[in-house]
Image 1 (cartoon, rainbow, N blue to C red):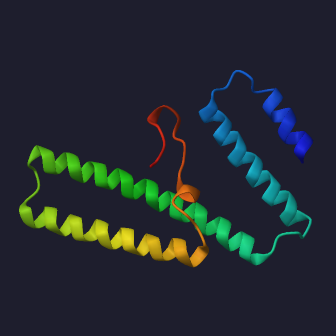
Image 2: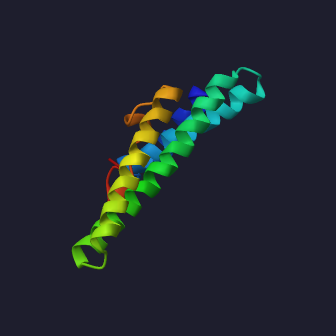
Image 3: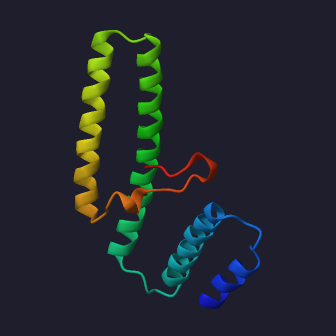
Length: 122
């Protein structure tokens, strides 16, 4: 497995650091698949990996929705009631995300993505 990862990196010298993060994620997924095929993966690893993936996607969506809400607030297209409701919703979502991260032993950094030219998720 390590040889395959080294071969991948050697062939990708023209990629920038953001692309290498994607390659690293791909290598991790390949490793997990290889371990699964060999029967070396326990259910906790699978659960934690799946939770990390799902929570990362939820975090990306939350960030996008929050940015859209801020744009709408700044443009004046939301009522005070809508702003208040959005604020409560985002706080509740953050609290629930914190609970789920604790449940699966994940940190904020575990859910952080390098989005290339868009920057890091957090």
